Structures are given as structure tokens and as C-alpha cells.
Length: 422
Image (cartoon, rainbow, N blue to C red; front, side, top):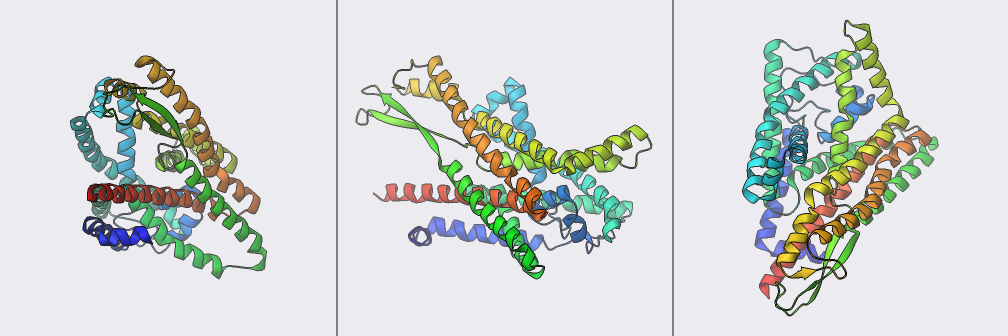
């Protein structure tokens, strides 16, 4: 409460808080504006009976359920970001651009531009998929070519609009705007999820509810612990170095999970693609293609296979994102320029190798822990037979990670202003 009062008493932070609330309100209003020409009355049944469509609904912030103009969410933007980060690992020229502020700004512009064609592509795929599957759930999604084009334009415009809102929020430095958009959509769906659980409650569901509450608490504690855990590397500065000669000893904090919720988002964005693409080939003329598409859908519908793939993706993306945000060579070079060194380690190349070795060790623990937390709901689904646990578990991970990130950034803003006041 003391921190909240300090935020309200600080004009810049108070203004930023109100702007974030306003942006979220605009997003939730847009989430209830349906795409023209589509009757989404039967989509709820379709989404509830399809695991990867349920994940798409979570990824879009719950907007797919009503097939609103922002039904794609920020998925195309995140896909575009993944593409350019991968390109940075392949092409040295892009990697060099990522090291400079001007280069990062240019890559950000490319990411925004690439979001538009990706939004059109994903919009077309989504409409085609729901057109094929909607008849089974009673949803009337048959569109004429003109309506199809209008729907794709609306979905692409909605994605660009959310991207713009997210970047406005990020500029306030009170949280990652894109993450907050997803967070707001998930939070908005919680009351309906709880109401549905109570409306269908029977005495036989008591154990399942207790397991779900316990799973939620374990997930919350686990994500907070992993997000807060860090390894402090001692650093000493030569007299007269960048430390000014007054503070001779410092530390370099290395977080166990440097990516926060990003590995979860990346994993979710990829794990829905194979069954989503396979849906288009279930009616192919070639028997081999039909069989392959059917087997792909069945394979990802298997909880054991799904859980293993989900764990591997979260594990891999934790290392991948850490390699993007933390460059041991740059840190070692900066320490050497500032006259700093790690006791017992030679400056330069040896320092970089030592930092990489330490990062790999702590990330091994962080990635495994985050992966286990991610697949824990899948394990519990096998135990309880409750379908909602998979989507609910992913939602809790994202929500907790976003809240932790917001708290950290707000605390940093408060600390900076307290220091300036002194």
C-alpha cells in the first residue's frame, strides 16, 4: 500500500498508471467488437472442445471467443519478433545491428512492418480453420470473397492497433506493453471461468478443485522464486576506475530466468502451429497427406507427447532468449574498459568464458524448473481428467510473470525518483 500511495503521489507515475488503465479499457472494448459478417455464437463450444484452439484463445487474450477485430491478439507481432531474433543468430550483420541503439530501432521498424503480412496470413489461416471446424459447433462462418477480405483487413488492423497500444505502454516503463495486453485478456476471462466452474460444480469435483488450487499456488510460488533468484558475481575495480575509487567492490547479478515469461509465450506460439497447419490438409486429395495431417493432429492431442514437446520448447527458449539479452563478451569488454575484474579470473576472453559457464549452469536449473511448472497442469489433467487445467496453468504462468515484471519496473521507477529527490 505504501508503494501504491507513492505511485499516486508521483505525477509521472500516476499519469502512466491512468494511461495503462485507459489502454487496457480500450483493448477490452475492442475485444467485444465482432468482425463484420461472422456469427460467432457457436465458437465457445468449438474452442472448449479443441485444446490448441483453446491455447490460441488464451494467446489472443480471450478475444478469439467472440471473433472480435482483435482476435489475433499480438501473436503476429510476437512471431515477427521471434523471426528477427533468429535471423540475428544466423546473420552477423543483423547481430551487429542488435548491439547498437540505432540498429535496434531499425530492427524494431522491420518487426512492425513484418507484423502486417503475418497478420494477414494468420488471419486468413484462422478464418479458414474456423470455417472448416465451425459447422461442427453450429457457428456460421461461411463468407463471400468480399467478406473474407474485409475480415482479414479487420483482423490485421486489430493486431496493428494492439501493437501500437502495447508500445505506448512500454514507453511508460511500467511494464512490457505487449505482455500487459495478453495479461489483460487472461484476467478478463477469469471471472467467466470461475463462474462456469461453480455453475457445473458437484460434490465429485471437490478433489479436482483442491488439486487445481494447489497447482495454482505451486505455480505462483515457483514462478516468483525462479524470477527473483539470481547469482551475484563479485566484481572488483582498480583504484581510480569507473567506480570513482570510493567503492572498490561490487557485484554482477545474473538471474536464473533472464527471459521472464517470454519463453512461455514463444513455446505457446510454436506448439499450436503444427496441429493448426495440419487442419488444412485433413481433406486433401492425396491419401498420404490426409493420413499425415490426421496423425499430426492426433499426436498433438496426446497429452504425453504434448507435455514433452511443451517442456522441450520452454527449456530451449529459456536458453535462446538468455543468449539474446545477455552477451558475455560485451559484459567482459565493458568490465575491462571500466577497470573491473572478477577475482581469480583474467580480464577479457577468460572473463567471458567464465560468465558463459556460470550462466549455463544457472540457466540449466531455471529452464528445467520453468519447464516443469509449464507441464505440471498437463500432468494434473491426466490425474483429474479436467480439460481446463492445461489452459488455466498456462494462464497462471503468464499472469504471475507479468505481475512480477510490472512490480520490478515500478520499484525501479520509485527508487530512481527517490534518488533524484535526495
